[in-house]
Length: 238
Image (cartoon, rainbow, N blue to C red; front, side, top):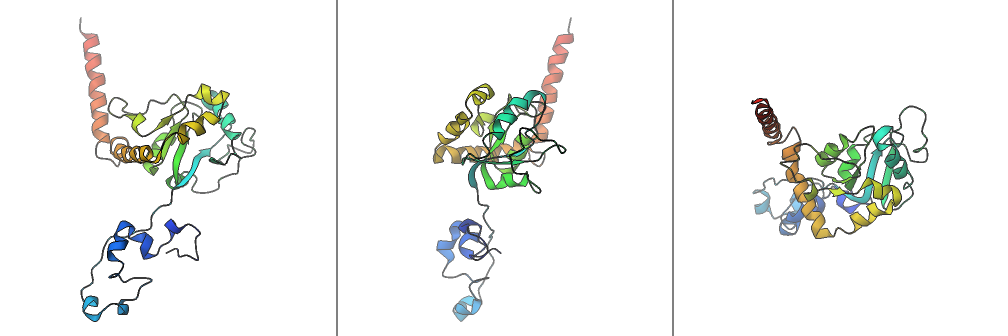
């Protein structure tokens, strides 16, 4: 596990203080493990050990993250090109996955070589920008990663009748963004910690509704098919 010598981020260190989360203050005088040898405990206690759940927390970075091509056609062309101009802005972490060898708008954006989408797991905010069309898998990748979507497209999202996307996503009008990209920073910056935590809670709950690994996604598909079929049957009646 990562130690104080391996990383400058305390929340990523694999010592017991971080890996036991909020249980550490309660159990710190009774635990043994990688950095606390068993023989340091009283002999009677050492015969009564048991395992508790633990893990290394995922550090969430505050920058607004985007990974993708900045040279697309059609729906997202202007938005992606404008987004690339923010590459040096301290509020953003922008990386590029260019298409082919030619890159115009994204030529100054650092290229991401591996686990580009996986980096969403390490950020609080993830931009969902239109590409060749307004429909983008990036929305669902952000949801799966627990990263709050910052939507710059006319995205309605799957199962919109059953899911309140505004409870866990930030919507920025793309026409406003094209005039003043700082509107995105102001929108995100206006969300205080309490509201952000509520959004993250709603986001985790929405995973069941949207992701195929969830318990409600299949039912949402069936409900949507049934509603379409009912509308169709009413239209066909004389």
